[in-house]
View 1: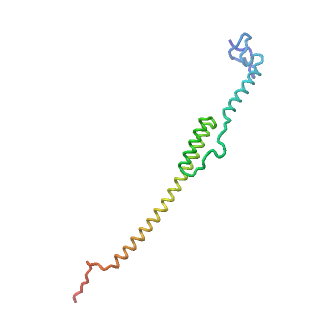
View 2: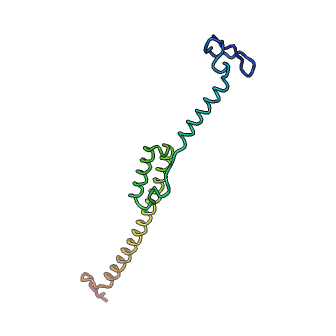
View 3: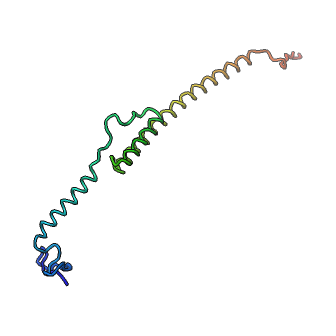
Length: 149
């Protein structure tokens, strides 16, 4: 059986009747108060769920090497397990660690490239020096021929 109440447009409600009075849960006497209270409870539960303690100042080690990155990730996992941070906060935290690792890797790569370029330049200079020394040395295979008249 359908509810005897009407919606905001003045049309029949159409919801199923709850109880013997012929009205649905939304149209029964005191329904507005009950719905408001239920709504507030839902909001309070959501707010409590989303309000987390997070990280405390100084809790995370400064990112300076791979061991400190590992420590930061472990601290994030522990905070998630203790429900101090949300899954989304952990993902953001790990993305920050990943970014630090990428930057560190790029810096190390640039340093290695610079060192290899210097080493290559030294090797080129050494080869040039050896070529000059070899060119100045008399060759046992060179003979001077006299040209006949």
